[in-house]
Length: 190
Image (cartoon, rainbow, N blue to C red; front, side):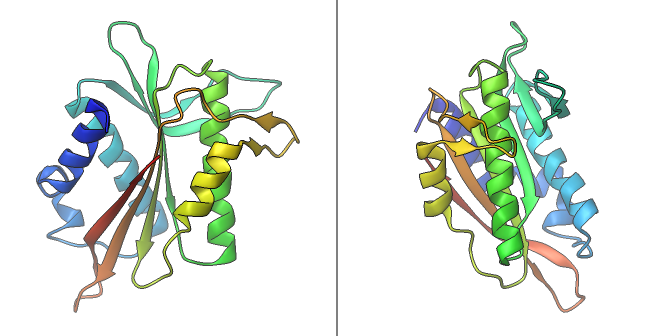
């Protein structure tokens, strides 16, 4: 694991989330896709700041033929304004539609990296699930990543040269009060 990978996993497995976002661990939240998406993006942005990056939410990649790709969080090196980490945070419900959405988000990350001239060192696809659903097929996503993908316009998007990917999952479960709380996380580094 690289230093950055170690720092990310160490912070997320430590008390970072409970300290910065107690609603995810202590208070609980209603199963609202939009609010959870906002929280997840905030977790990743705040973590970027904690690790001394300039973290920007909804940051667009340089445009190519009028298409706009916005990563949920982009961590820039402060000294050079170079994008180093691109992150997508998405709900995963275990359905075929959910699987397709993760593939779309992975494709967006890879295309955004290409548009940033492969400057990012790490791409992160972070999924969250509510309650008991099947786990995302990290092996299939990892295989797609290493084989390259084709975007909606039919353009081939190769694996970024850094070849560094984190497939991350947050599992939230409802308590007796029907509020969701973070139960555990999975990390798959590729």
